[in-house]
Length: 292
Image (cartoon, rainbow, N blue to C red):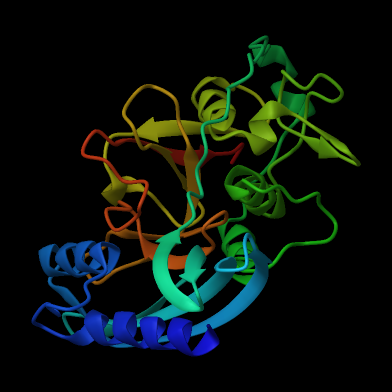
């Protein structure tokens, strides 16, 4: 089984750098990534992948299900600049009589109900939560923990917003609202606000908070700075599913982002290569405000 998974990874790596499609095997996600690169005047000049089996379950004497992860690294050239994008895929493979018959990326963005959030900000309380947002420290934290988990915080299966909250807090974003889970933005011990962990609740908090951690919505990704936040509504149905943080820019000045759940580093902001992407996707672009 390992040899077959290794061969599959090698085919996907070759596909990243081949100009022509392989008539025997083509990964749609990689083709979407290459198409996205083409639109940006960029290309993958080198790719590599390392896999690790997480678990295997024998469902019958003939059928075995394997869960595994793949760490992809892409060397991307755009104009005269080079940078490395990284991504961790969680995948599931099925073997019938020890022969690989199916392989798919696991859905990293399940539908999560967005709890109600209370909005009772009082402008007179602003001086109780003064702060200067340190973008450098937020980005440093995002880089340090993009593919691991700070033991000082609880982790979640859907960890994207929890990770972004930690980045914002590392940049000196002040917690407030404890112990009301529907108010403010905070995590303490084994408890947390909805806005700390739920993508839709964070989007609501950033757009409405007037004290403590707050943000201003801008109308295009070009206006974002390092340490700013992008929220994603993959289905375009008004429910936001994912959150990322800006950690770099490409050769055309467009954001590159880090994220958890599908752990990613220096990924192009629009997620057109994601299995969660749909033509109905909507974005919210937030630049973090402070008291300077």
